[in-house]
Structure formats: C-alpha cells, structure tokens
Length: 305
Image (cartoon, rainbow, N blue to C red; front, side):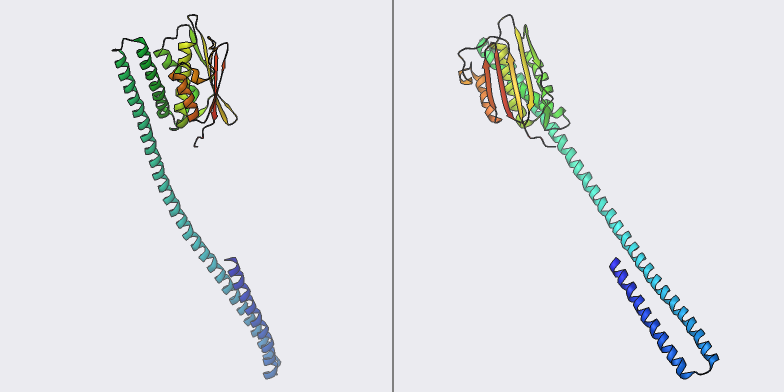
C-alpha cells in the first residue's frame, strides 16, 4: 500500500514538473516571437503567473484528492477486515463454547463412570461380606476378608477420582489416609498404630490402582504377621526422588530370618505385591531385621496437564 501511494505521488509530481518546465520554455518563446508590445507582454506574464497558480492549485487538489481516496480506501479495507476479524472471533467463541460443553459432558460422564464403578465394587464387597456369614472356618473366612479389603482398596481409588477436580489423578497421601481408615474398620488393630508421612504426590489412575493394592497388601501383611500381643507401629510413606516415586512400608515387629525373597513369603499377599511392582516397571527391596522394611521404587507417572 505504501509503495503504491509513493509511486503515484512521484508520478504526478514528475508529470507536473515536466509540464511546468515545458510551459515556461514554450510560453516565453511564443510570447517573444508573436508579441512586441511591452504592455501585452506584461499582461501575458501576468496570465502566465495566474495560470501557474491555477495549475499548482489543481495539482495540489488532485494529489490531495488521490491521497484522501487512498486513505478512505484503506479505511474501508480496514473496516472490512475488522468485520471479518470480528466474525472469525465470534466463530472461534462459538467453537470454544461447544468444546467447553463437550469437555463438561465428558467430565460428567467420567464422574458418573467412576461413581458407578465404585458402587459396583461396593456391591461386590457386600456380597463377599454376606458370604462370609455362612463360613465357619477361620482360614477360609480370612481369605474372603482379604479379598474384600482388596476390592475396597480399588473402590476407594474410584471414589477419590470422582471427587477430584481432575478426573484422572488423585492425591496419594489423601488416598492412603482413607485406606488406613478402611483397614482399621475391617481388621482389628489392637495396640497397632499406622503412621502416614507421605508427600502430596499426584498419581494417575494407571499407577494408582497397583500402588493402592501394594500398600494395602503390605499394611495388612504387617498387621497379621509382624506383631505379637504387645503391638507396634507401621510407617507408610510415598515420596518423590527426582523422577522416581519411593513407596515404603516399615514395621517394628518381628523379623523373618528365613525369608530371602517374596517367593519365600507367606502366600498370595506378598507374591501379589511382587507382580504389581513389575506392572508399574518398579523394583522392590526389603530389609529383614528389627522388623520388616519394604521399599518400592518406580518411575514417576506422566500426568496430563
């Protein structure tokens, strides 16, 4: 636009300059050739002056007129573009509303899904509880009780998910606090205290379910096997170390001198822990002396923002 205006201005100025020079040269020669009377020469010179003024005014008028025309044209073009921009913004705003509505509907659907899964798991837990009322053998009853607690551990994750603002992650410290309360309700914890010193770590659902089951198994195992009647303390912590999550469960109960791996453990519980650790690409270590100390390390789960 600027180059076009400059070109037109230079073009008009050049034409006017050429016309002015031509006018001066030709008019002087014509006057000198045809007129010898001084009075006529004076009149002609006056006419030339007025003609020069007229043409200069005309030139300025044309130049300004064209310039204002370009300005008006640019203004109209700007107004058209502004209208188009406003229309585009309106369309984007409408699309944003549609996307927000879709996201809200998706969130409602996910909340409802987590809520229903949690309710269905609670129904299964209740059915297991009813079945236990008809079991007289303590060993079999304990097996059902352990299964019921595993179901509750999973159901609790779905409960935390639908209560969370972000439906794909949970605060694991808060989850562990709730899990400990559930374990206290299901299993007798006389003279046994459970301490949770975890950091406020956010974990997605893919890692939350195996981690929840791991903690559940380790706590329940310690409650059942680590203490005599004098009781003791179980310490639970989930902390972050660089790009790793470190999950630890420690007790100050009795040790197991003949246990060298989880394959040497008491049964399903710790074997299940071993498999769950592999599922989250983690490693597990333990110290078997002055109580049991179990440490699980696994990569920090990716969380979508």
